[in-house]
Image (tube, rainbow, N blue to C red; front, side, top):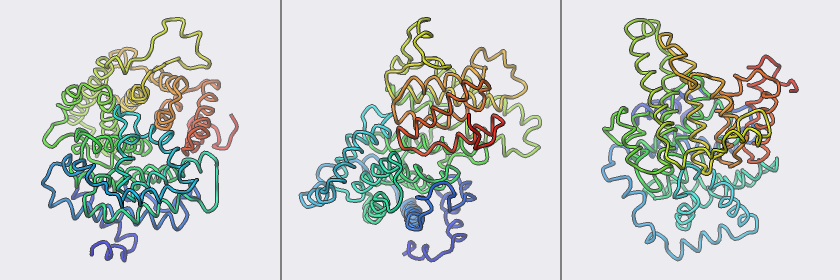
Length: 479
């Protein structure tokens, strides 16, 4: 078996294998320079975690590579069909045994109450909270993945150390994945993405892309994209948000892990994307459109950063200006055409008096509205950082003001307390926070980031050190 042979390779051979697999499956090979060992979190340096994560990554690449040449059927039919008939009495009983002890019941409840809403924040159908638990009745690996991410969230929030339950659950989930992958089990993509989220809760942010590339290869092999429908579509957009955050962290040194052409249905050109999102007639899909536009903005930064000297000269400069302007216009059209569900709740001028802090009071009713609007502002900041000289700032109106976008990003997070949106806000807050010069605003952002980690358990305080350096302070300085 290729999997066994692959485990015998050393790290260099493994990365070479993954490089070839990524290229063949339409994903980015740029992640391979990232370190395997993290200096960020003791959990991610545990030898058991490191080995299990490598095993999962190898398994996903091997499975994706073997599946890719033979895929013919529709992904929706393969991954969501015959759901209820798959649940047998024996399988259901096995799952009942998995969640039979007091702590595991508590982890399952925490998954439903706390973790699933994170994953479902752009999904009106709430697949992770409503559909995934049904799949887990017949999928041991998915059940263990749900328990693992929930346990890890509780450990992070409670700042537990030592021999952690989530690591054993994580290993159990990986151990049950092989038969799922071989049978194209409906819950396999959900299992893999949930485990990916777990990894990224503790892994060094500079290694995030290495935790994403296995899932990206699997999406490519299954031909899953942002319009696949049902659970595959929900899982795709959960993954896509992580891919965008990882690309922001890379600051142009790397692009998205999953090639942008694989975000849309086969054969759909990028310029037609808006029609597909609009045709969906769903607020959550318009929110996902903001994710897609942010992804394109990150990719353009990477193209600009890695351009050869010749590319920055005429006539290529004109093409870059055209590309930049087209994307900018599309971003503004996104904001202009937002459905009612994505609009902020307006209180008029009196709203200024209702805020408690230095940032605007920007309240939304839906979680997808919170994060999509924040991603819009983040994408604008990303593009403004690489604005062509040929475009004057005054031509862009108030949307051309970096500080306006920065203060809106901060205001959205200080006003709206949805935990999933707070986790998703860290990279936009980084883009916004480094533009702030007033000590009151800087302290407010620092306190906000600390609150996010204490509230959700997500590891985010590393960005405080980055912000301090951007403001001219020492990383360990008090603010």
